[in-house]
Length: 372
Image (cartoon, rainbow, N blue to C red; front, side, top):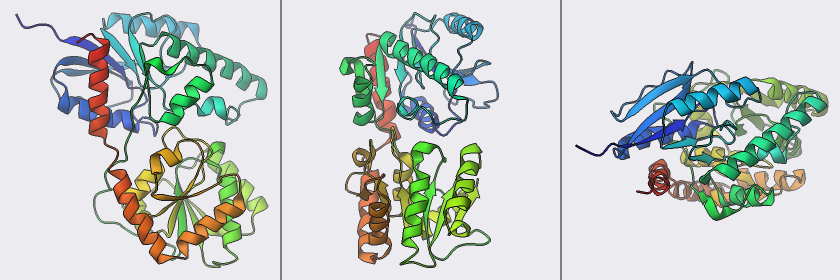
């Protein structure tokens, strides 16, 4: 009789979120390269993902990613025990229930919730209680995990800084950018002629208020310039819009696109004078790579992991200095030779990262943890 395949459960409940995009690609590549293990993928009830490989199956769960509810903790642990896994891989620390004691590994994307803990809209006391609970779960995840995966050395160092256990069982596995958007780029109905852009959320650590302030300084030299903010409209972006209307004389030239189709996003990348990433803290900083893969020059914050990921393919600024930010953006949008140099370096930089390598590293980790 052939030897039974070891059973790996991957908690992929975050697959459909922006944070979960690397997880979605991990599942795609694992199906292509690993036939030696049996996989069960745990998904949200609403997720319609279906496996293509015969050694993969999908199971839905009704439990949320983070829950301090004791009943949810007990019932989710019971569901995990029922799957009889040889190894569970949680793709968002701290997903693991406190009562799950069998072998598991975990992926920590970033520590933004610890480093920018007041990013939400909850009352102060509620937020303080939640943060205590979050830190307890994160500490517990790192304490009990057989291995911790992080996307950059910056996050590995932050794990040590916050005393979430040593790096003796931590491995850096770089994520990657998506391939260039396919299809023909389509201009939006009312497209700008001269603009810089940003894509993503408007959470406080994204530092968009300072970006808008720097944009205001740029307008003195570039009176027709616009700032395009691409991203789903939600509470933080609406709050930012109110702030701009109150504090910037150029609020009409800051454009919130909301969600846009890929064809329009591709057009923005291809026609922007620069992509500006002003973030104060990232775990990997994927947006810069996505701009690079579309041939858009990147002007970036020098904070957190961004120099590690963007290498010499971006022009950097101190994200807390709006004058320096404006000067570096001006340097790029005013010099076609510099733009072309950054575009060429950007294409080269993206070649350092591969989701196939990301998946291959995971398979090796699984084998090591399973004693194979």
